[in-house]
Amino acid sequence: MNRINELFSWQQQESLVFNRLDFWLFFLAVMALFVLIHKRFLLRSIFLTGVSLFFYYKTSGNFVLLLATMLLINYLLGLGVQEREGSRANKAWLILGLTLNLLGLFYFKYAYFFTEAFNAQFGTDFNVVNQFAVIGNEWFGKGSFVDKILVPIGVSFFTFHNISYLVDISRKEIKASTNFFDYAFYVTYFPHLILGPIIRARDFIPQIHQPFELNKLAFSGALWMIGKGLLKKLVFADYIAVHFIDKVLDAPEAYPGFVGMLAMFGYSLQIYADFSGYTDMAIGVSRLMGFTLLENFNSPYKSVSVADFWRRWHKSLGAWLRDYLYIPLGGNQKGSIGTAVMTAVILGFLFFITGWVELWYVYGGLLVIYLILWQLWPAFKTFAVRDLNLLITMIVGGLWHGASQNFVIWGAMNGAALVLYNYWKRISPYQNNTSWPIRSWRIFFTLSFITFTRIWFRLSEPDQPLEYLNHIAQHFDWSIQVWWKVWNNFQAVFYLILLGYLAHWLPQNWKDKTVLFFSKWPFPLQALTFAFCVFIMYQAVSDTFKAFVYFQF
Image (cartoon, rainbow, N blue to C red):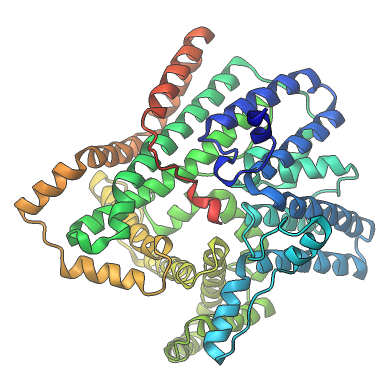
């Protein structure tokens, strides 16, 4: 009886995530019912919406009420935008929808961030009050909701789904769903609900009314994706994090500087294995249910430039920012009022959260340079607009990841790198050189830059990244004695990091042939191999449970 209560109640340490056994038991139960009803599309949508809301409840508790409320609001807003197509009211409904979704995101994710920054700048002492908790505790009883504002898991993802849905209706790319459960199923579909990939309504909703199909090739591919995702998460991401990265990052002063540098390259592998592992499993689970989720990663550490990296990394977020922010601002073609407004807002925002007066001098100097080039080089007008829009997009992308000054700096550094690369590639003698030494150097240089910027991504406090870099520079000692001691302590981890990168760099056609070879095996052999590999992988699980990195976003 106690076990049944645990299964149907929310416990923070027992969430239904892909690296827990409870999830796979849950998924088997869902599939057992799914095969009985899959031909009845409406019932299928209702069932999977209910299942997905239960999944979210098991992951985020009472925040499922927030998700359900946002579903109802955005469904009605979508109908409002559809019914008033082409009128001023259409834009009013769209603006209302965007405002409500963004206000919800800002309230839960950035309330403390902006309040603390405001208090620091103006010497005030404002406190954040969780009004939703106050109302919820009045309705459902005292203690039902905690007073502190907690960030609902996946809030950034389902907010972006809602926004893209409304915008696509306004652009006439899709029709508003008249069936509430079709829309609710699209937003809440549990494989992508909390960590993506971000999918468009135009790509997913048409699948809702298609017959279920799962041939042997698709089934084999799904098993392969699930197994690959578990391998990435349990073996590479979690083992490396627990046994090396967390130890070094939590106490860098206890290790030589070169170990801190190696830890950051290990972190680049960890975060890729962690996040892409989740989306691999999401794609595999979804494929078993007959639905297709788009690829979210394309071997990003094979990138030969920072621009190439951002085309390969978290592709669904990159495409979302491109289509709903970068292009509306004018893209690389023209400027807009939005570009000027967003530039001023972001500059003011950076000053607001940092208090750095130097920002104004930097901005003023860059403005003078840009104005001179604007007059002397006619084509530069287009470049300047493109540069500003890129910077805006990347800074917003950084802020999307979290309410932190460091995330903003991380986004700004990557935006600046994209701007510089756009100029460099015009004069680079290596741009079209595909020789092995040049390509290898470009890959290493890109990976090193991405790893360097991730210091701001991994460390949360504003002063920590520079302190970490300073420690690396001043205590880099890697004499034979020190290196041998470090090697003995972390030998297994270093082998695993090397193996992870080598596996990542294997030619894609080799990987494709391996999947095709696996798909030709008899089903019993596939099942036994899969079960054996999963059993072995779970032996690598540490006593310390590691949540997925992107849970915090």
